[in-house]
Image (tube, rainbow, N blue to C red):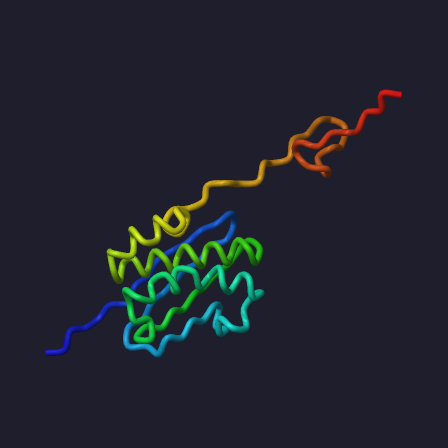
Length: 142
């Protein structure tokens, strides 16, 4: 009897971006983001950011046997790349538990969500909301 391998599903979030990552067994090593190949998505720097967990896991897992499909929505490209990176790292840890220690030593935010957010605008009564939450009108001493 052939052992049936299951599809691994994980989620990564960063700011407003949400990435759903699916890892399919018996694949050819393809990585697709919103139906596009990784090579056509984003900039080169963002692609390397996404590939970090895959490069770190190269020794522990033969990733040519798996296909990775990502559905990402919301936020900007940089937030989406971070969300994808988090989702892929979590999925790879499900495949091989030994990767958890490697990822934590390399970068803590490969496995946990980055909690930082933009500060909301404050109303000051002077229409300063368009300038941001902390910026004030410059004062001249002379």
